[in-house]
Picture 1 (cartoon, helix red, strand yellow):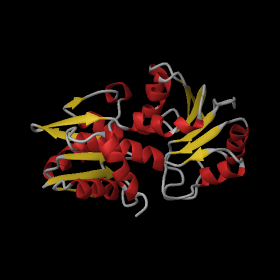
Picture 2 (cartoon, one colour):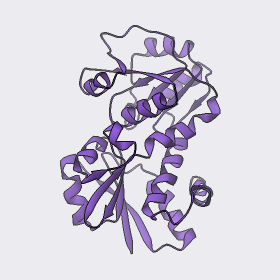
Picture 3 (cartoon, one colour):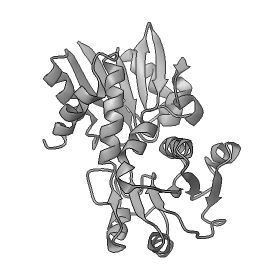
Picture 4 (cartoon, one colour):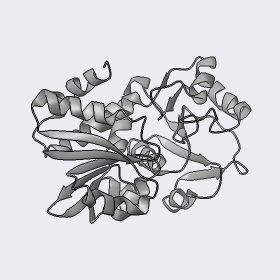
Length: 263
C-alpha cells in the first residue's frame, strides 16, 4: 500500500485526506492518505522517511521548510522557493508546487484582472505572486512586518509593511495569512480593508471550510469572492497526478475529487 499524508500546523481541519482517498478508492488504487501534525518544519524530511511515505502535501507554515528539505525541486517551485507537494523517488525527496497553477485556475471566473494585493508573505503568497506575474497580473505584497518580505523585494515585487503601506486601487484582494483559520482575527485593520474592498473587483481567502472574518467583510462590500476550496481542489488534482505518477489525467481525477466536497 502506498502511504501519503499532509504536514501542517494546524492540520486537523484539512480536507486533503477525504479528497485523495476518494480518488484512490474510486480508481481502485491501493493507497491511503492521512494527516500529520508537525510543529517543527525542520523535522519534515526526517518524519517523511520515518513514516515510509510515498508522497505528501505541505500546508502552513511549512512550505518554505519543505523547499529546504528537498533533494531536488522541480518546476515553478524553484522560482517560488516554496513546496507544497513531495514525492519519494529512489530514496530522494522531490518537491513541487501545485498551489500556483491551482490558484490561477480557480480565479478564471473573475474575468480580466490587471493587479492584485496579497495579504501575507509566506509560502502561499510566494506561489500566488509568481503565478500572477506569469499571467500579467501585477501583485503587491502587504505584510505585518519586514519578516519574509526580502524574498519579494529581491524578486522585484512591490512590497510593504503595515507602517509603509499607502492604500491604492487593486482589482483583487487576497488573504494568504492564517488570520481567521483558528481565531476571529482580520489579516489587516478593518477600516483599511473596507477601503481597499470598496475599490476592488473581487476577493479571495485561501482559507476554506468556514466564513472567515475577512470573507464577512468582503460580503458586506458585496464583492464577488472565493474561499480556498476552489484552489484546494485544483491544486489537489495536480498533486494527485504526481502521487499516481501521471497514470491518470486531470480530466479523470477532477470530477472524482470534486465529489469529495459533497461528502
